[in-house]
Amino acid sequence: VQLVESGGGLVQPGGSLRLSCAASGLTFSSYVMRWFRQAPGSGKERELVARITTAGSGTNYADSVKGRFTISRDNAKNTVYLQMNSLKPEDTAVYYCDANNGVYDYWGQGTQVTVSS
Image 1 (cartoon, rainbow, N blue to C red):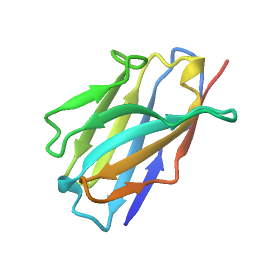
Image 2: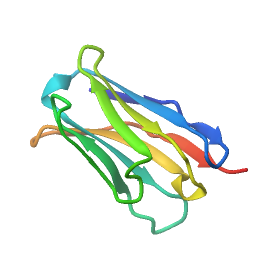
Image 3: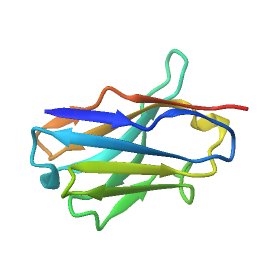
């Protein structure tokens, strides 16, 4: 199983980025997909940012990103996305995607997002 994130980078405050996570080696449509992030600094816990159900009909967001981030998925392409708008410096983190079916849990390697002027 492989999860490969892409789309991270350096962006100014107020800007936008779209992260992608391409999955292979699993029945993608059977997995709930989630985006987590881990901010720099020791002791920082990995934070759940957004979650989407298997068919894409249900989504949940952390309060800190509601109204700014949108999670979506394309089961035909085995890909989950995170559209991030109105980015703030506090959104700076490594972003990870996660696939979970209640039995197995798989992680990507992460992609760095830096929000700075």
